[in-house]
Amino acid sequence: MSSIKSLMPSGARTMLSICRPPLRQGSMAAPLFGYQQVRGKASASQQKTKKFKEKGKVEKKKKGPKNYDQIDLSQMMQFSLCDAMRYIRAFEAGRSPEATKYEVHIRLKSKRDGPVIRNMIRFPHSVQTESRICVICPPNSRIAKEALAAGAVLVGEEEVFEAVKNGRIEFDRCLCHPDSVDAMNKAGMGRILGPRGLMPNAKMGTIVEDVASRVEDLRGGTVYRERDAVVRLAIGQLAFSPEQLRDNLRTVVDQVKKDASAITDKFTKEVYEVVLSSTHGPGLSLTGDFTSDSSPDPAVLTGA
Amino acid sequence: MPNLWKRLHKLKALLDVRIGTGAATLPSAATATKEFPAITRLHLTYARKIYGGHQGARHFWRNCLPRLKYHNPAIPMTVKQTTDQEGPATLTIYFSENLSRTASANAINVTDQHAPTPSGTEKTTVINLKNLTYTDIWHNLKALTGAEEVSPTVAEQAELKKVEEMQLKAVADRKRVADIRQAKKDQEKMLEQARGEVAKLRQS
Image (tube, rainbow over all chains, first blue to last red; front, side, top):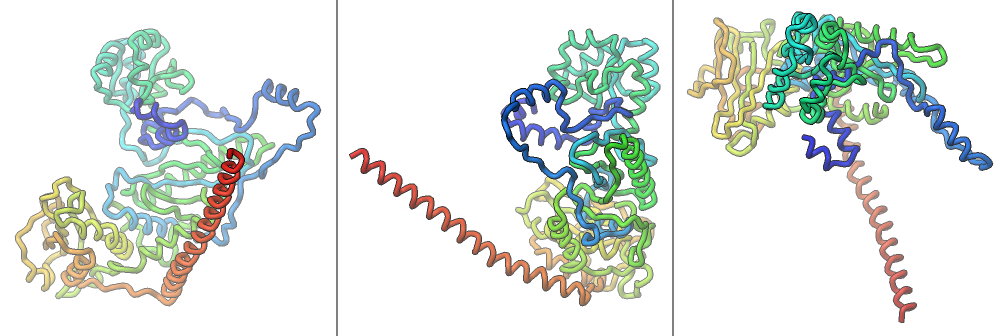
């Protein structure tokens, strides 16, 4: 994969990383609760130099629109949850009910600059089929025992390095305890794990003291963030019943609303539109109702 | 998110799922007759590539299965795509208790190893799909199950007509835009040529 990547233009490379399986994407999980990244804000020093350069010049800066466009929802076709599920299940006919996922796209009313929503969520009904986690830490220590108890599949130092060097990478995420960082670097793991996006890194929040709680978070949590004023994430398997999907959807929308209100009052954000989509299906805007007059019995909208 | 018109245009696909070949309700427990008992399940198996007569089966999955699923949300429909081009392309129909009269006349001895095993009361019949087009497959399925086709409502007919008109207009528009682009290209070519001639004159 790395060789292909290096041959591509940078744009294509980012595309590739977007196309990576969703499990891996989660490895970006960082302990970012409460931390807000500011978009489009130049650092103070940068601004200074710019001002200095432009001194004397009377140049009008071209400014784009301040807010993201808001479409007029009165023109949009909207559906109740069960109707949308009926259509999506028709489009996904014959696909694997576990691998195919329902997705939700939450459109926000937001300014183009300012903080973005970025958080982690735990669903009442788990979306991902079990993700396997590897923990690099001193073997037979208290940390190792806790990590195993929390559900890590592979724990240790030497044995992990051996397995990785032999090409047996049987995990989706990798964590590391600060005590083992030197050992890991010495073993040259970066060369193998790096291109796969599995290399533990303090910035990603994958080198942590409290390994056990992190393992628990990673097993049940999904990371989401706002891009161009839309939060997108998978919220259920195709086999889910409408009730299960409703529970997950409610959790997501509530939490995004909470995130939005937690942002400082200089920037207001609110949920504008909720769109239900799926792996292969179209995006259907939701009305917020569970059923409509013409929708089928919710009990039949499950399984294959 | 794409703009509203792009999104609305995409949603024309919904009309395509509601009506067309395969838009029909299969007999359910409520509408079953003695001649055509209720359908409990459908299973389709075919190979990944089209050669060896698998094309129709694949098209059936692409075109008809979504429509069937839309009108019969309660019936599980599964598809198995194999890599064995020599292998069978079959559609297995599961009847709730007895085979329909037409299905019992259809007896062929092809079995599909990928199809889920029928439960105690279910009876199955198999259609061999090799070298059939998807419309043929649909007519076979309809004859065997007694499916009732859903005809488009007045509103849907109007929408269909609109889509057709848009397609016709698209042909004209494509031609118009192609002409504009060609004219622009011709102009540039002419200018380029003229410049070349000037350069030649200067050199000589």
